[in-house]
Length: 136
Image (cartoon, rainbow, N blue to C red; front, side, top):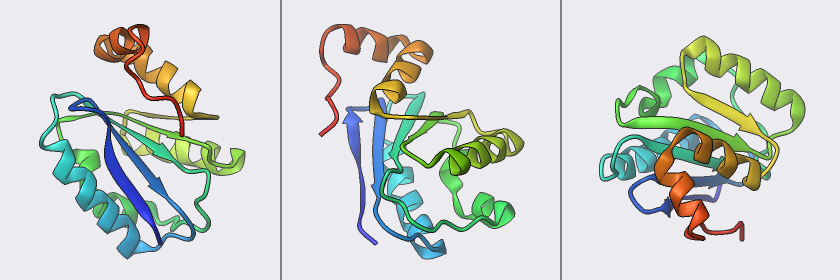
């Protein structure tokens, strides 16, 4: 499954995108990439995930919690996921709360950026200065 993990806003926001069906190996590979980038950022580092093209996804909460080490990283700020189908977003939001993850599911990229700007002054300032990339 193709996956993208890169800086969206240098040292502050990581962008990730997965395409197609996900399995445990895909999730672990993406998490390893996020962890690597997260360690180089200036905390809190946020993760923005484009879920518009994700197909199937493992629903084992305990297994996912063990696989996704970045969620336990003290450098992590908010995890914001956009574009997931509404039912998946509702379920995911519930799982995030149960797992103690600071995160939010939103409808689209603009809502994701707005949410992060409301949480972090650095993003708010860059957004006001036109330094946040528009969705490609």
